[in-house]
Image (cartoon, rainbow, N blue to C red; front, side, top):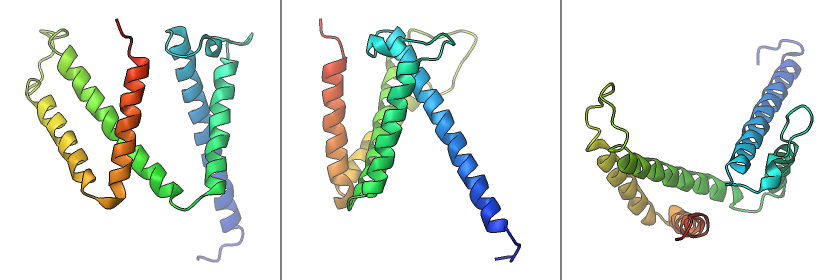
Length: 167
């Protein structure tokens, strides 16, 4: 808009470099997460394989594969795909925060330290859990969110059933 020659091209280069940097960081983070989970027995053992430089090659390849799957889904772009992904992401974030809250409720009595006192630590997690569950119930009354809440709930229950060791 300022009519500066080459400004649009320069901005496009800056945007592409920023996206490549974000992609690189994402591949690094997800590959190291997969590698660490494999070391701890929470992912397939073959994801813990490293090359001579210590790079978890298989985890990097899995991360790149799913990055290309995501790009392919965006290119394919069936109707409603973006809405589904956004809703599913929101639903998964709610599940994540519910699990964090439940973990705090369970573990806080065990890890109390005399050095650190948090006011409200006995009741704030319960209020947070109630708010998250209330938000989930409200989402069930929204036509656009209902199917996502149900699908994320089913997926979460299946994952808990599959991943949680049974005695």
